[in-house]
Length: 432
Image (cartoon, rainbow, N blue to C red; front, side, top):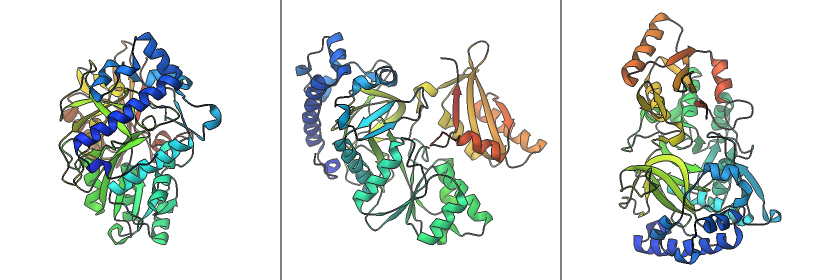
């Protein structure tokens, strides 16, 4: 299948026609090859021939993570001998889901990241240092590697963690860009300050930020983003993706949201009643994959809540743009009458100069209501520091979460367990 990075610049009417043709192909494909969708269509008396336009999508029921967890291999549309790669979700919101990819899917994934990196001001002249895992069935690491290769840029596969090794490699191999979790970039800055490394005299000029928000909903840098750029004058590019969608939304140099790649995905933003919300409002990211051969998805609700924008970007792209994640539906916390999403809590903690690092845990009490415990690595252990932290949380949250102070080694074990592949900042131990 041939793709073009110019698709996002086409008039909206042309994009819609292209997507509708791909949607018709997808409906025919899953009708013939997907055990799950064959059954779903039969149970809901759906005539696949009636799904012709984007508006016709609302004739179909939505699917969600639980469907994939319960019926994982019923989504598979190819014989097992066509599967080249098995990736899996991280299991943040329940048991992991396996996503099987064919050779065509791997090529599509490489194109996706090629388009993403070029959107984020990347070129064949760049050298990227990958500060993330490329093993443990982690699709993102493989995708970044494949996309950078397709772009023709240089790659340094270093893996996550170990600031000393990251800096040794930066100083030795002179990468122009890094791909990393934003909170780890803060740790790189701290290490550099402690070891007399002038970050702004190094070769690194931009960062692709994964896994954490670096912007507010108005696209200004949030506290975490400012912590980075105040010290290190980098271009920060935000990207949003999931294993299931096999596609990324990535910022351009105008920094006004993550651009959809319309040749790879159809996006709906749905409310609680599965109705499309107006542009600019928050809804649940709901996707239909285009061009996926192994495990295509129709109207898959990701659980992520974002705002979206339809007006063209000043970069010239006409494709839909997504805001940073407001929160995940299943991670919403209801604590003492206050509704809270983890990203908002993280912003508060990132802003506090008395907090070096943290992990937030939510669990059910004996009344089966939410309790919040924050594990904090403080700047020092003192009554004054404790008072400031508690007072700040009370003032900002209007409630007082439980706090436990831990040391550097303890928080590192919590954030990066031996079997983990991402930095963990939120632990959900609530009863189902």
